[in-house]
Length: 501
Image (tube, rainbow, N blue to C red):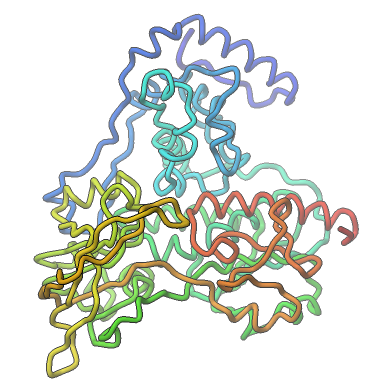
């Protein structure tokens, strides 16, 4: 079968489904399972560590068309694909991968966009290795999954290079107004879903750029801002309106928006309130939360000095406290800003680190030092009130805690002092309480997260839904998007039922 065979876009859905069965059956005959299993996974091309740790250009370079087709050929096209069940937004992964195999990249992109409004983002930052790729049958059979994330990135990048996504036909406008609070991954997703269904959607964002954590939290070397700009532009073409510098709870409350004619609401305001360890010296100059540090560098573009004159202290010896992806982003950023030594200080062992394996590997390649089983106990300042050192304590692992990871236990008498002039605390974030405080009747949990019915993402207030970090307290981009898809379906039903339910 020719790899360039195209799927006719004009076919009706039921005819297309039959056609897919035919050409996929033909593919299976052309390349038997045993042959597919012999094909090695295509590695992601990357820039050399000694070059990339000096700038903010993207690390991963993406597959070529030839590499993508060969990687897609590894897919076994299972009768019961586990990869779909492992995807929080339910992408039809086998079909999009088979479309890549036959060379129809445009159809593959369209297939992904049926379930994912931000494919170029997800192809870069989602932890596919613990989701769709973890449940890939090929991994169970051979130990190495199909590179689904790399293929998603290739397809979406090819789409962007060709002029961007084609806006699908939308039904007649319903006349229903929807307010989305927050332009992060959850808010962008629910906006795209509801706009495609014909509703009038307005996104209210507190910052001056759309993207939420995607724009202020994730560095340019992992997610170029041009990618996010293109994805937001697609939503604008769908008809989504964005109102920036608008703080819901301050500029206007949800009840104010209801009085303005909005009938359904989605709260996707994230978790932007930084957590600290409450150890002595955290108020010294040079001790940042990861939220402030990354916002200065990313959203306010301190990395692009002198074009953007945003102040951020580069540091000669930078220590980042934490072991998640935010910690990896922070320490790799510090290295790029000129730190001679950039350290990760993490209270558990490498095995317990929640950061993606790829991000840890990239950090090690770039010269980041890892200090495991170590926790800071105080920060020491100089006569000007600037941090100059930190006292740490060695730890050992005890019994598992509620997370299932072994609890770190202090080793008596193991204190030591190390020189630092920049500290970034990356131990998690909590929801900002503003919306809860200004929305009477909105039920919140112990940690300030909004309580929802997980089947619909409905809150305690009729017509108000929520998803992402504001309900989870800190999770992945794709989980936030999964929440948004669930909420969008429930919101659409409510609007079409006249506001009932």
